[in-house]
Length: 140
Figure (cartoon, rainbow, N blue to C red):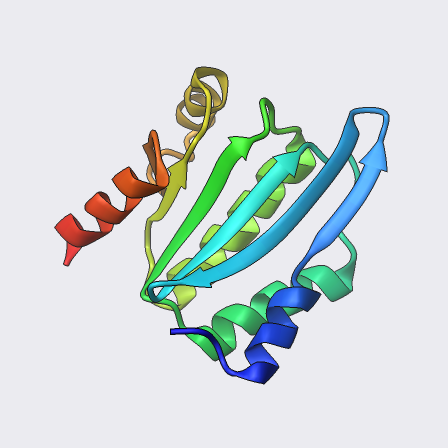
């Protein structure tokens, strides 16, 4: 099911792109199969503007997703500002009934870091988006 027009606009508003010394970075959201996916490409080393985080919060409010997932296949590391955004995303997911967010496509370094800093209780790492779908199905 595609989101209504106003939600499509929110999905567009919940997009962020920047370029820094670490290279280009983009964060975008996809609504697919009652699941809100955050897609991360590259790595940001700057704080995200309030308009972006407000748009993401509004997505959760209007969509009330049953599932939430983060695609990390487009990045090879997560600086602190990106980790803070993952916490922000997970917090909003939990407030709307998704206590654990699927992480897919993460490399071993990111998966290890998530475990080491105590975030594994909030995220379930799987290799692919298909594995995330299987995990979601097992949670129902």
